[in-house]
Length: 212
Image (cartoon, rainbow, N blue to C red; front, side):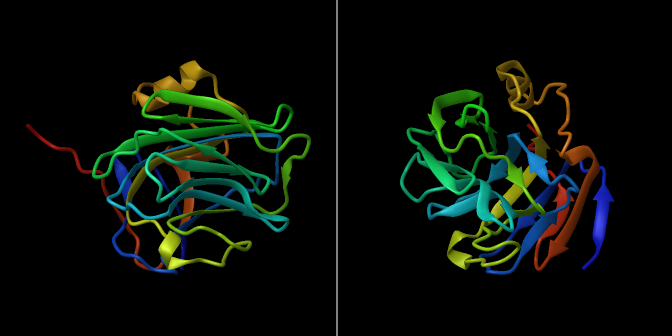
């Protein structure tokens, strides 16, 4: 297992099979967040429960989490181990989707953005920051700090363009990310300069572009 820092523009992580082990661990030295925005692009054919983004600290396994429920159109976003369910989401299979989620500890409000469309704003947890040693994983959902993986919640497919910020992005900035325009990269996780570790069968590949 080696740590890599790569310029990943035009790349994607491929998770080719259901396991309870294969994942990508993303590194950050930050240990205190009063707000979060996390964005990524994903492609899958999974209709079961599956993880999209998992951030855990020693005090909370679901400190910030994006989770697709098996129920049609439902995506959960956790902050500080408290969840909000966003319903009516047009989560299409076998297509690239752009997903962003925001949370702010001052108001306690979360919001989900899927392919440019904002959700309702919902309350989860206020007044308490995300603090402690931060472990972020793609491909597996942490039920404990850095572990507790369940194959039936794993991600199978491709993930690209992962960014995370320590503040709530404006709707304009989120739209720029969604439309693949010039946007300010994440100041916590930056796909263009990502520090990561691959564990198990995950491939770093060129992102596939269809030619017509």
